[in-house]
Amino acid sequence: MKILVRWCVNALALLAVAFLYSGVNVDGIFAALAAALVLGLVNAIIRPILILLTLPVTLLTMGLFIFVINALLFWLVAEVVKGFTVSGFTAALVGSLMYSVITLLVNWLISDNPKRPAA
Image 1 (cartoon, rainbow, N blue to C red):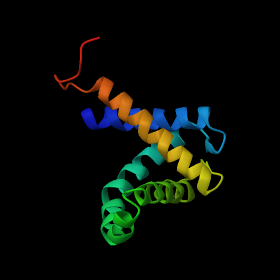
Image 2 (tube, rainbow, N blue to C red; image 1 turned 45 degrees about the horizontal axis):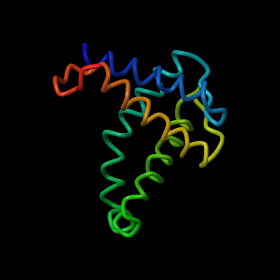
Image 3 (cartoon, rainbow, N blue to C red; image 1 turned 180 degrees about the vertical axis):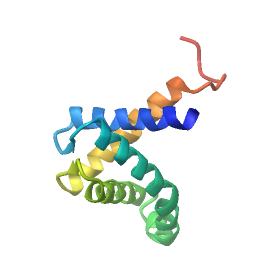
């Protein structure tokens, strides 16, 4: 059940990114759900391999190359999923940063972690 909630939250985050930033376009909720699923799979399978392979460059840039990896994977998902488009590398970079921040905040708010400060 928890994984379905996170999947829906990630899809809504993609819709929010498309609403807030014109370089990212999502045609509808089904495209957002598909893109969120593929993005989750890509981040779970391909991202660790890329981070390991580019470790020297990542260390040389003090970790900033991970932003490039995230943008490229975001762009890759946009190329694979129909109905989810990114207008270029800069849009992929901005979109992946916005997507990461939105999902981080929303997942933190809905988590059942007792260490969350009381409001």
